[in-house]
Length: 158
View (cartoon, rainbow, N blue to C red):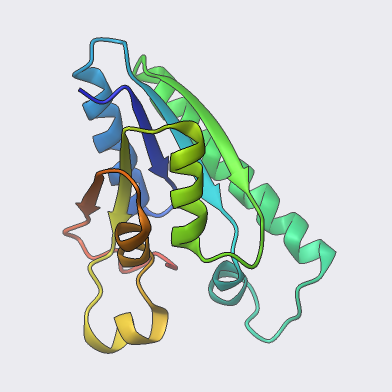
């Protein structure tokens, strides 16, 4: 049984499927599990969601923080409506890789399980965009549950 489940959320439908699975896993513990939803701002968000030719300005970082806070608030509302104890954490320490940041938080929070959505990209798309899930798997100090989105997330940015 997992008591402390860390869930990486980014607002995509794949991430939402991972959150739903984490909520389901927490339900098996009969109310003794808790979730921490984490959203990490990174340089890649800047290039994929916003203008790839812009520089990192305080205004842009503020917009990224607002978007991240909204993603976390929406996820928290979903978890709480399911009766699962949850909290959120927004991390905006630019410079570290996504996997390093999430692995560090898993250790600090003493999580038992990490739940991450994966888009399942292959070949050229994966080479060009990298794989956040793969990075997390390689660096995670705890078990990782990958949740795939069979629809392929055609509209998701990441």
